[in-house]
Image 1 (cartoon, rainbow, N blue to C red):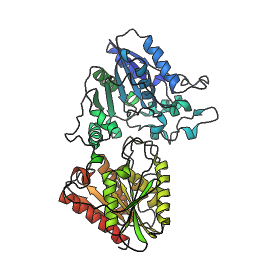
Image 2: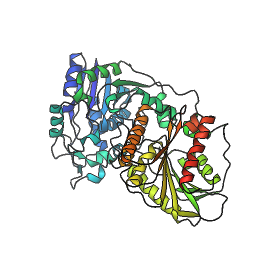
Image 3: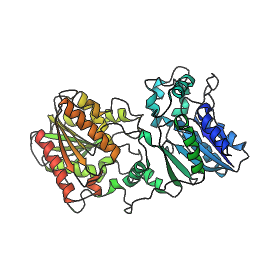
Image 4: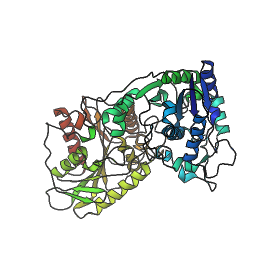
Length: 494
């Protein structure tokens, strides 16, 4: 017999699991829906933090007699689940992450939810979301109207410290089996995990370890409300060790560390200066020169080394710009989590101001060039373009938050911003073998641009993948890079 410990996400209690728990019990298992301290609507629990909730689960585990205990965490609930598993690894058979990414050690839940600490009241609690903002805490696909009304009626404030207190496990649970249940109506699926693993950062490459399995569930982020019977069966499959294993690519080098256009183009080094977060790649040319500011993608692990501006992709583009007579500026910005776009936007604004103030730069001729997830930052510049911004470029961009990225603030949607102001032309480089969910954001952007009369030039790489300069170093890729650089320079008057 398996004992399922069902831990809910923010603002909710064990009641959300009632139907799923009933299905599990009917199948012969034990189910223990959990209402964590301070989440029952009463005022006690002042000073409650993540550690309090970890202790709640440890006490529950210690009282169970079943030999096989499966901990299921949904949203915020995955944080105390991981903390409790670290305290009682010998009692836990498996961890199930329900439509929720695994947090990094030392990472608070606030890293993946929208602005929790900023909305805490004087009593140290975060008010539950309103009907208008509820979807930012997880898509509501498939939730019946009656269940949604109950979700809104029974939601309670969340102690702010539970969201801001970092998760610091000792590592005792690092070998436990983990099953990720991906709710596909929200856009997450196994192909998304495969893309992340292939990208190479250690936090994603670790998902190819044999202890990880993945299952899909055809509903939204609240399957206990939208598909309780299907969820119960999926949890039983997870407990039995079922699911898909993702394998690492044959080339063990992380994508971001592979050489730029390896074997196709030699990009010569140019003088480089470091100014805080910003590097300037300087051309061999007199007089104030136009500048291209290159904005890396993300989220990026804050401990990643080398940092983005020292990786082959930004070094390559910075040198190409300088070789063509422009100042190539690269920066490290703080897009470390889905709730960090505002921080990254501040860093980008500061970098642009630094570049424009440099006497070697013509401050009236600036281009911004965005990559991948960093392209969401383009929305600000498209919505309110300054006169000196002559061009916006984007390469394999995400031009709207991806499904499941509810923590991204609404302002960071280039597909909504394009053409809303008389802005600069856009040079957009598309990878023909792009991941479908990213390609969909590009198509939405182009549709909006066409409807609003925005000027967009596309550069296509028919056989290229996301990161084609590193993954697909072909003549086609090299020519696409050169066409994009030439298009941007022409808009800078070069």
